[in-house]
Image 1 (cartoon, helix red, strand yellow):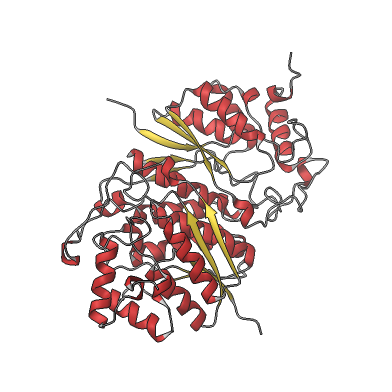
Image 2 (tube, helix red, strand yellow; image 1 turned 60 degrees about the horizontal axis):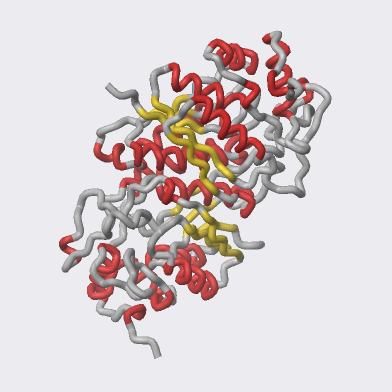
Length: 231
Length: 231
């Protein structure tokens, strides 16, 4: 019997790369989906391509959607600066300016479209409610509402043939727990990219994403392979 | 006091053009949103631009999103033919091949993103559960689930400052009732385009959309101004 297909949202960062490994470990045939959405850190798409190739996914689609038309986020609007801090303890608990309006809703909607045409009943997304509690679209109650809506949105939902499930295997893990899980599955984090504000394709080390990643590796007691000098 | 902003999904067809007029009549300041999604009937975008200009909207954004990457619909895949019939009575009651997987979910998600950056609490969409009962994402229970999800997805939802509402003023109207409503609001249907399968920018007259439109005008007893010879 062939493995069940699953659409995996893949940014090329640490979380989504771990999710891809989990989807595969759970017996799914992963189809990776990334977005060129106007983010300032397009270097993450190179990472997504590396990760997808290393994982040997059945397909990797990069969808072009320009969210700059709407603005409202430091990740898509050059006039809004990405915040930098000295320590992960300084990362704000409220909704940060790096929040992209409705981004996960848009990403999941494309995943839903692809799942429907693939005949897949499973979508994986690396949202996390601990380290990013400030993002409204990373909370369990949001995901549950999305899943309910999705099952009313599609042909399968009407015909009652398939029940779509949104998998969020990282939702209640700390960054250290995510890294431990990934390492146990053989993930090469040297392929990934997390920085919101890279300079010449190098991680800045001081944005929220860099700080949370660094703290995670420190807690696990492992050197982040993405920080090792090349060559 | 300024009018409340509303995002109006505008395809350039009969339904969404009527919705735009209704949003304005109900006292909103409309922001029109259209999509270049890989549809074979891109001529509808010219109609959307004409309609938006005639209505004097505050802004009209055409978002580029290529749904052809996923396929699965006669509207986005040239290898799947658009069905043609002799009469509106022959339009299938089950889900037709012109259904685009998750299209309304994707469209609403972009509308949600724009609403959030505009500070708008209202989104209008011309879904209709009567003439298109075959489309899963045109049903009232789907819209209700979407609205619930949307209110958990956004900054406003978390902060409790605004409750987003998805307006579906056409949902239980017949095509004839929609046309009557639009005519009473002064809509010029000569600006609109409904055909799924136009030839040289002319409506085919025999796709589901053309047939339902023609029956609507016949029931109202009015000639469709889009069919009048030009000049």
